[in-house]
Image (cartoon, rainbow, N blue to C red; front, side):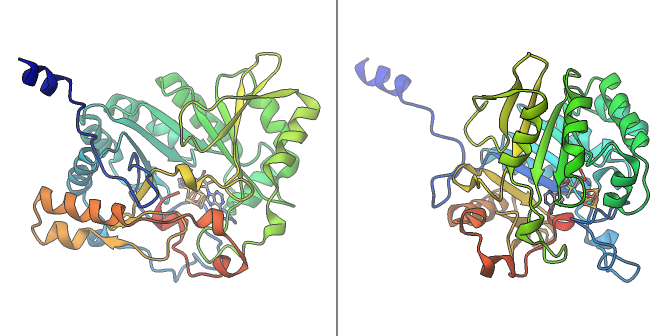
Length: 348
Ligand SMILES: C[S@@+](CC[C@H](N)C(=O)[O-])C[C@H]1O[C@@H](n2cnc3c(N)ncnc32)[C@H](O)[C@@H]1O
Ligand code: SF4
């Protein structure tokens, strides 16, 4: 009996894998396309992503079936949260079909990041397919500023309509991502905070990062988190909030008058690599273990070569076990110049 009791009380073997720094694999971002209808200056500058740019062709993209199969394997390795991204994920035709396939995986938190341009048409079908939440990127409320940032003349009202449609469809609370770039939209910080305060949506300010190799990033273009918080605090007093969980990327703040909270993602001035539990899968099936990676592990060849689930799982686990990335913590003048993968391809 004593022996039996011991067996019953033995802890469950921990699901999943950890890397060389003890970080488990918990989140997966899946890029479903490297294409986008915007040309945000900090992500897909027009001069580089022009007419001649070679985007992935259809046969190179993972099919929805391939993505869903990999997603299940990742969940078996400990992933609890999947975010669909891109490029612009809503440009991938019938994305709701993929959402429905992923929503069937038990215990998975399934979200999506979008520029909001197609959200007014898509919010309801996405919700019906099983999407739980959505993050919408929006860099300014002023049309001139917003259009200068998306660089395709897309009007801000259409994104606001998308946010409303998502709210009506039941995808709220919505996270709104605003990248702050010096000299472009720091004047929009306070108006954005004022607009979203009291709506229940959570506005998150993102420091402009040196992702990819094409956006001409300079440290001078970064508006540090402390400066963003000070700008808002001067008009609408703020106080810090405890993180929801270990590894949360956004530092949380709330308005002292109780009218809501904001987040700040300070990956340049306050790097959070120590808690990073995120893997990224590109639209053509390459696994990356860091946003600032220079190379990844091709899973598509394995998939299409007939590998079993166990073989795929072993391949992913092998990549994670040797992971030692902490780019943001060691960022320097040398690392900035590395040939890093573009964010539109790897998935933001
Ligand atoms: C690459 S986008 C992909 C999803 C979708 N197209 C969108 O814009 O939401 C994901 C997120 O990355 C952010 N992003 C892109 N380039 C960035 C950069 N250089 N620094 C900081 N954030 C960036 C975007 O603002 C967006 O919130
Ligand atoms: S940030 Fe999103 S919307 Fe803007 S260019 Fe990149 S992928 Fe497109």
